[in-house]
Image (tube, rainbow, N blue to C red; front, side, top):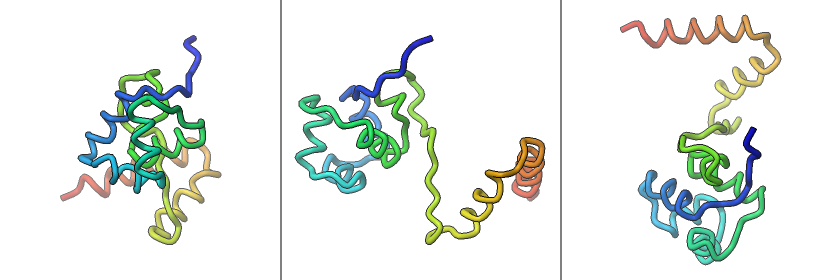
Amino acid sequence: MKELSNTLIPERLKSAREQLNLSKAEAARRIGLTAASYVRYEAGDRSPSSQVLTSIAEKLNTSVAYLSGNTDDISSDIISICKANNPILFELITDAQSADNATIQRLLSYYHQLTNSD
């Protein structure tokens, strides 16, 4: 089994940024970095800590595995839900975390029924 690496591949960072149509400055703001720090990461002059790499992946809607070259799937593997911005969804996810798999499957099935009916 391939060991996961937390080493940033600069080309992957650029690709994730460009997929969102963000400038380097906009990406830096979104992540909470200075523009200079962000540019150094994208140029490969500096490597982010694993905590910063996780934040970058989350804010650019991708994954650490993609940014480090362990997968070619650019999609995110983490979703953040802010209670203040979306209290109902936050409550649903919080409650569902303690549910068994059968209950979660029923919820998902019910959701699909609701969203597929026109």
